[in-house]
Amino acid sequence: MDRLDAAGGHFVAATGNSRDVVDHFLAPFIGRFDYVIQNGGQVVTKANETLALHGLDQRQLELVKATVEADDLAPRHGNVYSTATDGYMMRADKGQGELYQNMVMEFPNLIFIDDLSEIPDPVIKIILNWPESEATPFMAKLNAELAGTAHVTTSGFGMIDVVAPNVNKAVGLQTLANHYGVTFDDMMAFWGRRK
Image 1 (cartoon, rainbow, N blue to C red):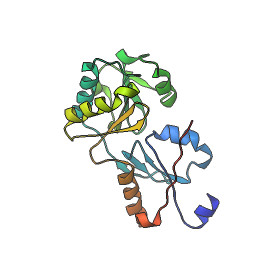
Image 2: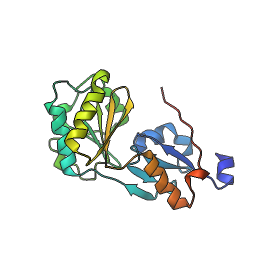
Image 3: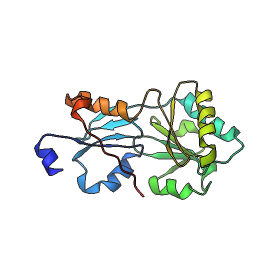
Image 4: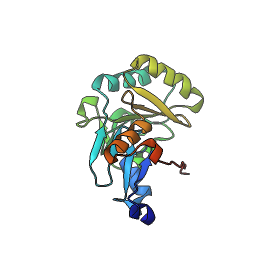
């Protein structure tokens, strides 16, 4: 990082996770890296300047909620509606599913609501977790319901994210590239998975 800083380079954390999770794992380096987080829905510079915040609209939130509720299978945790700073879950879903505690760890200040209209800020991402063997068919069902008005993606293991249409990590990286006056040819990437 010292050599990268000295050369005028930029380190970018590009992930589906929220800023709190990234800051937890990269705590010693906060202020020295840029963020492409929530699968590209939120782009923030190391100087804490927000370059992009792509939110879903109320109709998309309601469609996802209704599609989950109408399915025969139970999700592995309640839907989490992630904003730039907080995570929200329906009060009726509190404690639901074997992975509920994972969401509590990721969003230690999880806010419980009775209606989606109670979320005061744009929802950048909806986080679902479906039985792994059923995740692909359920994603197809979500895509059909959303009819191109949102982007449904997975990071595997039954984890499903719904973000604004035409939003992904590559779009977020392009936003940063434009900000810093560089191209993809100036970038290199490496991948890792936390355990």
